[in-house]
Amino acid sequence: MGFVIVVGLLLSYILIRATFLVFGVGRPKNLPPGPTWLPIIGNLHFLGDQPHKSLAKLAETHGPVMSLKLGHITTVVISSASAAKEVLQKQDLAFSARHVPNAVHARNHAGHSVVWLPVGTRWRTLRRILNSNIFSSNSLEANEHLRSKKIEELIAYCGKASVSNDYVDIGRAAFRTSLNLLSNTIFSKDVTDPYEEDSGKEFKEAITNIMVEAGKPNLVDFFPVLKKIDPQGIRRRLSGHFGKLLEMFEELIDERLRMGRLKHNDLLDVCLKIIEDNSNEINHTHIKSLFLDLFGAGTDTTSNTLEWAMVEVLRNPDTMSRAKEELEEVIGKAKIVKENDVLRLPYLSCIVKETLRLHPPVPLLIPRKVVKEVQLNGYTIPKGTQVLVNAWAIGRDPTVWDDSLEFKPQRFLKSGFDFRGKDFDLIPFGAGRRMCPGLPLAVRMIPIMLGSLLNNFDWIPDTKNQADTLDMNEKFGITLSKANPLCVVPIPLN
Image 1 (cartoon, helix red, strand yellow):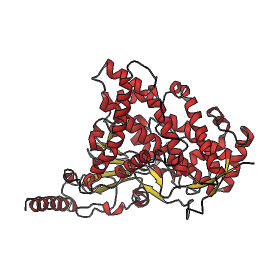
Image 2: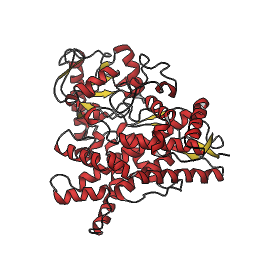
Image 3: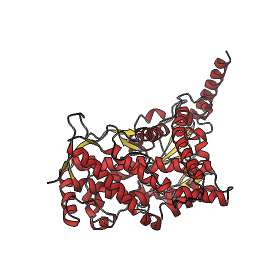
Image 4: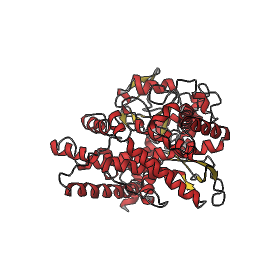
């Protein structure tokens, strides 16, 4: 009986709020244009299961700065480079807060995560740890031998598959490579066998599920009054996925502490030293959340990007031929690409850029929130508004890119466009103070992985086990992955 009363009161509240909004009571003035709001749901019915595409389509009608009502949440969607520059650079501080999905409050991850924390002392501390000890030029150069070793293991794994005429799941193989690279950087050890197809499967599933669940449309995010109920169970499921990884991190931290003063000169040592010197700055909970951020962002995004690059190259034989010709001419056939080779491989770099243009790892970037009323392109953006930057739409803007839907790496040969946050027509990693800190590692790993795979094997689709492994269907989450894995057979070069 009590439950029925609660539900009745809740529905009455929502209906009253919706009625006020429909008739303009409390509607913010001077909002950007957008579609008409429906009672209760606002514009939720437009999202579908591919929100990046739905929002891009709406922007064609309502403009590059567009407002929607998603349940009770006012949302502004940015779909042009000029508007993105305003949000991410010119008024970066005003838009630097995060709109935190309810799901990532599971196990209070949002309260400790460098991704979701507001800009402040603790966020700066965690960001400094990343920038100084993983992503700085000195740190990356010091760990180059690790990346080379992991690429060698990837090529050896593919070589083993070629001998038995077996297929390689490119996304899973790239995931294992990225996973062990990060685990060696953080813990000085592999956490998966690089030569076993199913090794690390649970870890990959946990991270993939985290990205999918955190990116799902969640009723609680649109109707915050439902947060205690968690009607879709998204926060509950995410708590389980987080728990699997956090338990593993706890075991690795305990193992290191039992070793006493034996030093490994890895990220875990750095974090434990900071805690020892100043436990008020960060604690074990913060570093476990930091590791969760790193493994989530550093494995799924890299493996997805490599998979999209491989499928695009396989679907475009001229691109494949040109890439192989460049690789053979510059470094020689059947050799592994080294990081200092990449500058001499401009066409390979163009393939990476074109892949990131068409398939940005995080299509809507990480959502932002306006902490106080702000003016944007002549419109008033109210306090508390969620702001989504549609990097997927910006990368396909036909007013900027000729043949915007076609995969044409050569477009970058004479173009100065880069994806490091200065050219807002290409922002797969975001820009400004909340730009993805892992960009320096990604721009090293992706070209050498892709180049080494192309230079050591020919590749044919696994038609025996897969109906259409070269399809382009997408699975939307926080990250944008291929819906059906790319399974291809490596053929040794003669």
